[in-house]
Amino acid sequence: LGSVRFGARRSPAHVADAMRLSIALAAFLGMRRALGWVSLPVRAEKRPRGGISRKVSADAIYDALGLKRKEPRAEGIREVVDLANNMNFAYAGTIHVGTPGQDIVVVFDTGSSNLWVPLRGAGGSSHTLFEPSRSSTYMVMERDFQITYGSGPVSGVFITDHVSIGNLTLRHFEMGGVSNVSGLSGYDSWKFDGILGLGFSSLSLNKVPTVMQRLAKTGQLEDTVFGFYLGDGTSGELVLGGVNLDHVDGDFHFVDLNLAAWWSVPLEALHIGRQRLKATPSVIVDSGTSFLVGPEDAVRDVAEGLGATEIDGGLYAIRCSDEVPSLTFLIGGRPYSLDKDDMLLPYTGGACLLGMMGMKSDDRWPMWILGSVFMRKYYTQFDW
Image (cartoon, rainbow, N blue to C red; front, side):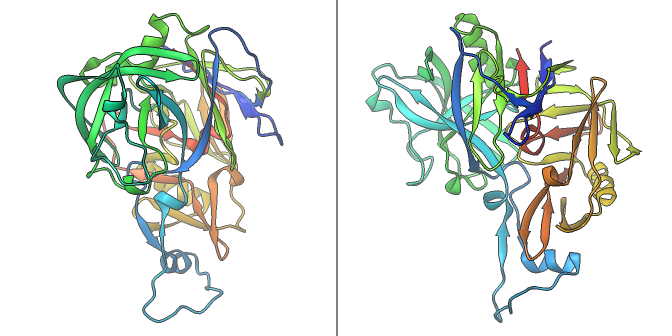
């Protein structure tokens, strides 16, 4: 099995904390450059993600928290906030597909394992579509491609073509050519085009080789690891083949995986302040999820302990001025704490949203998902 390392971010220079999945969590600090090491800038993009895409009226938030609107409300006008597009972020960067290379913006998602790019019919003018006719190395396979995310399905066909990620190249790489995104919630408003999965082959559709599998097999990486720095209000960085120590303060802490499908590690305890709560057996570290996500009952207990009020199924709000205790995940014998500033998303009029939501979970494998809210604080190295 692989591992994850966590490290602490440097403050105030946006340095993160370290852990090994083996995941590593470390704080953000210094940078090394070497053969087989590529750094990709990733920018924060607004993106709907499984179950988070929903609309909540401002009135519902104000009423739940007992806050008054500062401005009069016009009769018949309802202020609606699309939380998926305005409050949640994914981190996307540019890859090149085809010969000559065509720029495609993708989300780097540790919660899935396939790469797909959009073809004609997949989106409107806000997206860059891959054009097979412009590539001399394009081939279409005789197999359907269909994958379902939390926010809905996409479908098309398997295709092969050259893929470049920085100075790394995968020749004749098998991926999805997606022409139907009608079931994918919010795709028309996405600022990126496709998804590049960084999960394991056990999750890969039709068991096709993953990007990391091919990079490892072709010997292009100095080390078979990758590291994420997710900027807080700024751009971030994905390093393939190493980590950027400019973003790390202190040592990495290694934690072995307990399920090599997702990047899943054992969770030993969960605390609000000094109060210990019931913990799920595992947590998944997922760069493609915006919030902290957990079983509905567990999230309800945590939100209550933090002083938040439920405003819509699974979503919570709190007065920005309220005192909020820390939330701590005990992983690999070390505490990883999130404070008020890490968990609250300012809204307006003194109201904040809690960067956490509940989901219906499989009782056989209940788990928390540690998304961008967690990864913005802790630099994470994924050890393949």
